[in-house]
Length: 251
Image (cartoon, rainbow, N blue to C red):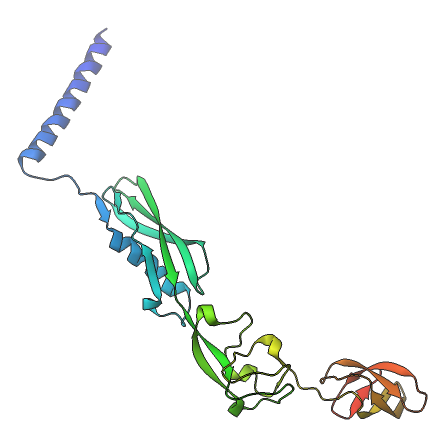
């Protein structure tokens, strides 16, 4: 009984002291910590900065257009940290949605997180290689045949090439019009051997070397395996193109 009475008195003292301390704080004009507020503009700026940082060097900041203002985020006072993740779309262009998560941690370590999505449209531009003039099929490309231009993302075809060094020295696989964007499928390594060309057939093994004349049955670039006909035996065989005059037959 006495122990219970002592505990009750102690609890009452603690409550009284706490109340007095709060009252004194209020009387002295000390204010409680203000909650952290991130305005709609601040949330959008966090999301836009993340996009421009992660989208690469070809994206200008003014190409990221806000589709709709996000909602304001309000959190308890404390240390603020943010995390941004891509939800839908591609940073290379078009509509995208990112998730902005803001966390507040108070002095006691308690964490509170608020989040919202932000919608943008990315009107990105890309450097692409275009034809300077009309290029007939199988044209061997030089630096004077092509140049780079910046094109809007939605006007760049799939597989577009972005640097002239990717195409110089290759040949076009189809006719290209002036200003047309070159793609990976529109260029190829030049054919060293043409169908119908007379080539040297080379067969080598340990201690022997045989050389014969043959006729290519198909086109081939250096390193390609093509069919050839031995002019002496009239047999068709397969060999690897070594240069514009030699096809090595495996032994």
